[in-house]
Length: 105
Image 1: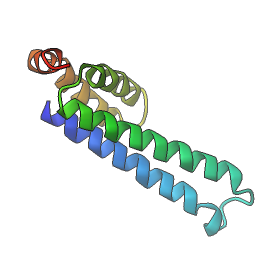
Image 2 (image 1 turned 90 degrees about the horizontal axis):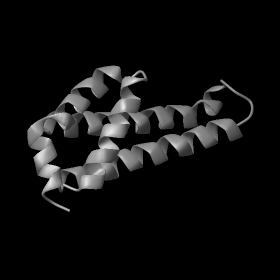
Image 3 (image 1 turned 135 degrees about the vertical axis):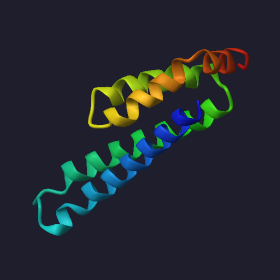
């Protein structure tokens, strides 16, 4: 389960870094219109914050956070974060993590 915590944290902070780079893109002369970059920035920060909040509640043993983390890991496997999604999903579906999250509501 610890590798799941680490993978989710790395993914959340990667989203923060990507969102920051997207925010700085128009100022580096990449695009003229700043609205699409700003909206992508907001989406990146919201996704990163949601993953961090889910990870925090997963560490407390919340069942809904376990289900949400499995869904997030599934999306990570289908994206560029595949190298983080597979260990995260394997850590979430083992028997000890299921017991940890199902006994605490």
